[in-house]
Length: 66
Image 1 (cartoon, rainbow, N blue to C red):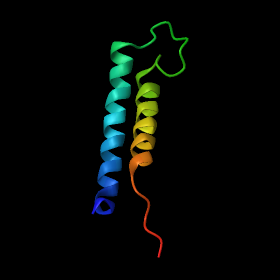
Image 2: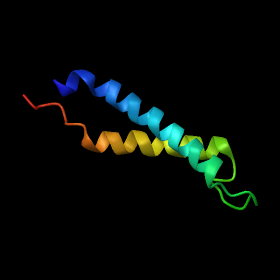
Image 3: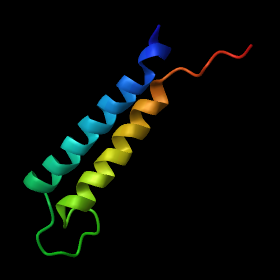
Image 4: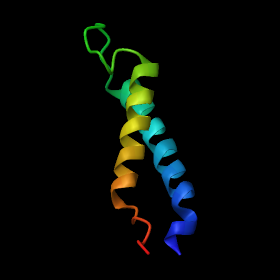
């Protein structure tokens, strides 16, 4: 059943990761420009997107082998 919704769950993880990355830049960010990830909103959002997708992908079951 969960394999049918694999892409939906992965997409939700990516969107939540992107929102979290942008929120991290907005609330915590590095304003001096010396931080590679959190100094610009694009970098922080892309990093959050990647981490959200990878995190959700860890918990998705693999396709059963035949």
